[in-house]
Image 1 (cartoon, helix red, strand yellow):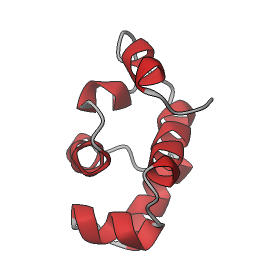
Image 2 (cartoon, rainbow, N blue to C red):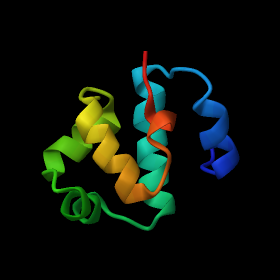
Image 3 (cartoon, rainbow, N blue to C red):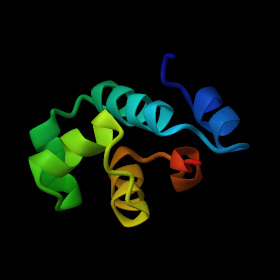
Length: 81
């Protein structure tokens, strides 16, 4: 899946599986030109938390909200089942 606002809009209409959220976050981070370390600094999360989000093992809503804000994507696009 490539990252575009169209994809974000489409994905905000329904919930995503954890692995889909993980891929979306990783692709959005890369599209923004952020390294894991850059996103960590921007969100205030530690590197391991970003890696866990991108692995689909930590989908804490508060963390996802911070990631969405840092990546400038609607938080609803990271809604998971």
